[in-house]
Structure formats: structure tokens, C-alpha cells
Length: 285
Ligand code: MN3
Image 1 (cartoon, rainbow, N blue to C red):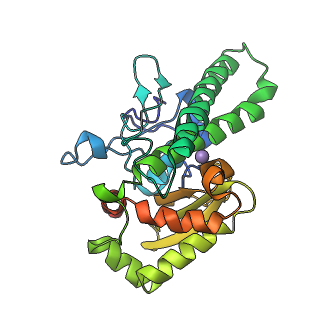
Image 2 (image 1 turned 180 degrees about the vertical axis):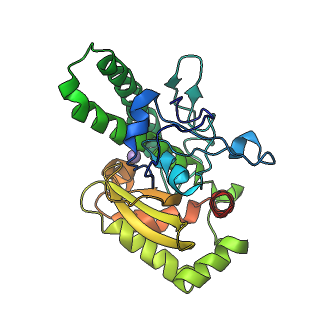
């Protein structure tokens, strides 16, 4: 594989993908990195090129299995084709831009330390698996390194979707979705309010660390809300992640302590709905 962002054919068969990261799809990833497909729609620009198949993360979400893709570009995930490694991209806005909903210190620590850690370990897992294939590392460690890959690739892709899925309130964040996404939400959840209640409840009910997700399920062609434990467990294959909220304590504890529900309500004030609409459009095809 060429990395999350590299546009290549996927020789590895079906990747389960899913949500966020989750993404289970690992076998392909082991080959070389997370595989990504570039959108075949030439009308799409680079920003909308899709990750498809990635092994681990959301990235993989469903794209390869269902022919659908998750809209993240190589640039979004910081894939450096020269080195074959991932480099953490900067936030698309200032660290303090989401205040008062999400505070500057939380954003700094979350992005610069936690997310950077996943990127470092993702690169390390890919390197270790290459050594394992070359016989330089005990093949018996494949389980360990495979989990390191799925966990950290999930962390990288989930957080990339998370940062880009938010926007300052003076730059389009918050409010409610419009257009075809709003229509789909009304169709599948009854109303935006019913969706938001379900979404916050699902995210709030994660036991321990995890994520809440709004996904597109391409088989039935409908939206679903679910949650994931850690960075990659609990999602089912084929889902395309549209909106994710991080409910690990590091995402909110400095400002909200144990009040996860308050954090989730605040999060809804900074959702970048135009970006979520873009992902929905790409998933529906
Ligand atoms: Mn996090």
C-alpha cells in the first residue's frame, strides 16, 4: 500500500472500513501502509480526493468494500510520498478559535501531543511490519503490530476527520445542516433535533474512551448513528464516517471535567456542516 493518501489500486481485497477509524481493515495495511484510493471523479479536486480502503482508519471506511469513499486527501492526512510516512498537518484554524466551546489549552494538548503521538506510532507500526515481513522482527509479533497499526491509524484518521469536521462559529461552525444532508437526516431520524439527541446519547454512552459517529451506510443507503470504543473497535464494515466526536477524556476534561454531556452540547455549536455535507455528497456518489 502506499499510504493513506496514495492513489493506487487496491490489491488486497475487501477492506472493512468503517468508521472512523476503525477500521478494521488491516490486512492491506500491513502491506505497506494505509492504502488510499483517489477519487475517480475527475471533477473532484485534490481536497476531495478520497481515502478509500485505508486500513485502519476511517480511512478505510468502506470505501473499498462498497465502492464508496471517505473524503480525505493525502494532504489532509499529511502523507509524504517521498518518505512513505505521515506528518501531522497543522490545525485548519487557531488553537483558540473554537472557544468558548472547546478551549485553547485542550486543543493544543490534543492536537500537538495526543494526535502527534498517534502519527508517530502509526509510522512506527508500518516500519515494524515492514521489518517483520523482511524477517527482521519475530513473526510472532504480527498480532501486536497489527493492533498498533489499526489503533494508531484509527487515531490519525479519526482526529483528522474531527479537526476538519469543526469550524469556528464565525467561520461557518454550528447551526444545522441544510440541503440534501438535512433532508437525509429528516428522513432517517425524523428531525435534526432527534438526530442530535441520538448522536449525543450514543457518544455519551461510550464506556471509557471512544467516539460518537454519524455515518452513511451504503447498502441500505441511509444514515446511522453509532459509537466506537478506543480508536477502532465497535464499528461494522462498510460504514462511511461523516461526523465524529472524540469522547476520550483528553478531549474535554480540562474544561468540562466529568460533564461529557456539556462538552457534547458545546461540540454541536462548532460542527462544520458544509464539510459534513461534502463528505455526504462524496459517500452517496
Ligand atoms: Mn483524541
